[in-house]
Length: 429
Ligand SMILES: *Cc1c(COP(=O)(O)O)cnc(C)c1O
Image 1: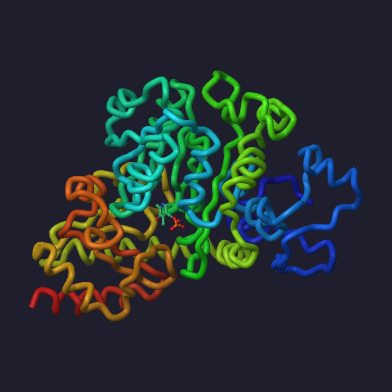
Image 2: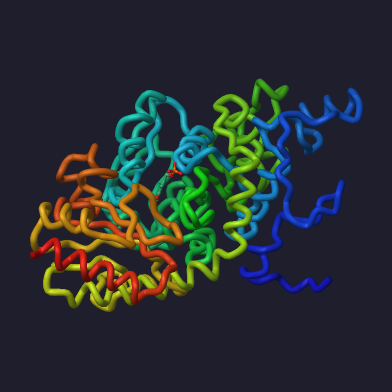
């Protein structure tokens, strides 16, 4: 076998998936089992002590899920990955491993609406908090970091507006303060952006979106770069200090680059239980096999549709970062040179009323609260995904009342444009 590193297109098909050792099955089987027979009592004890890696109980991990974790780590260029029952669960699990009561994160104010709610409301129940800042303002990011800050959090390509974060600049700030940069890479996928190469420590995904790619699965994942020194200071005791539930094991000292992943599974997943089921993992593995092909078509269609919309008289502006008119156009070349994905918004001159009429007039587009499907999707964020936010937060997040969000699918671009054309005609009649 060649020792030349394999390209993305090869890894997306093969990483994590050897022929099944028991049967030779070529596709990754769905291991629909809760438990695994131990060889003997010593084997069981070694597994429970984390002295040997293997399968114990499917709340922790399962061979189908494990294959997906391996594939995600390979595609992101990380040391390891943990799959979860949803993208939101992945966010909680990532924070659980590094946070504690009284601690905070500094987060971008341009995030998926559900994440804004999770970070501004729900995490308070754990005693954690988030300070939201304009992620493009390096001075504001730095000023928001205090001695209780444990991470900087952003989206590489932000949902819904398509804003692109300057990941190397943010990684440098996080580094200077001895804390990890966490990047939600859902909209970009590892085919378009690999945050670890730009200095990120943890990469979060909602597998629900482009990775599975066809709206069949709810899932999430954390990929760890394996490069962060959790023992450089006393900020991350779960990783650097003895863990009482594992006989005083120090995860970072014992497991090095795999410390985060092992802790997230052995402690976080064990006790919070946001496990991905094997059937979902199987669907996601199959989706990922065609990721690069789909993302190429998504990007190709998105630029055609965005350019067409930009020239339509009813449209005020289009946020797609792949447009030359976008303030983020130069950042595409730096952060996601293969394309700016296919999620963006456009504002209608007719405001809220016209947006609602447009959504009721589309035919090919599906009106759903999802993105990253092979089908083209449309939603009015202000009245749905970003409804819980104040109007000020909606505007900051790129989901103002006069804005419609689209996720451009892999259909023929002319058909997508024709549908928008007839719907815009009805909405503005
Ligand atoms: C959908 C989404 C999430 C949440 O993922 P779920 O799988 O729905 O829990 C997080 N971040 C972004 C950018 C998303 O689009």
